[in-house]
Structures are given as structure tokens and as C-alpha cells.
Length: 76
Image (cartoon, rainbow, N blue to C red; front, side, top):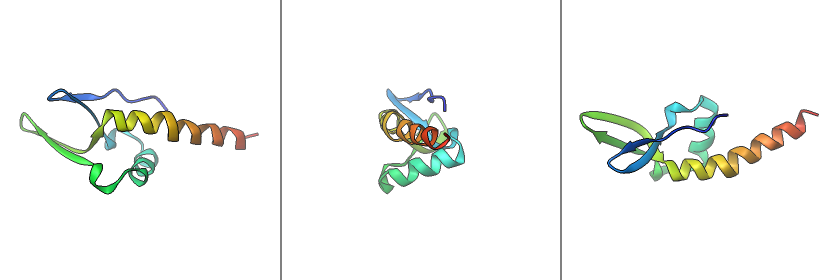
């Protein structure tokens, strides 16, 4: 999986969960606390299911990379 590039809204780096595949978004949702997913309004646009890029980055580096390595081991 390629790492997402964040969008910047009012100085905050965010990602939208719909930028991920369904499986990845569901995996990330199950890892996150329920109240951490936000809806952001900016210049008349509404961004649904946003999380801070730092949270996504941590999940990507720890959880996602570890599970990917685990799947690779099982392929042998």
C-alpha cells in the first residue's frame, strides 16, 4: 500500500478514510477510538470521516506495516 498524502485544512494535516480501500478503512476504523473520526467544514466543502495525518501515519508505520509483514510470512 502506498502512503497517502494529507490534505491541509486550516493548518492541520488530515486524511479522509474514503481515500483508503474498504478493507484498510475498516481496519483503521476498528483501531481508532469512536470519537476520533471528524467531519470538517472548509470553504463551503464538507470533508467526512477525517482523521489527523499523524494518527494515520502512526497506524501506517506500526499496525499496517506489521500486518503486511505477517501476511508475507504466511505466503511461503
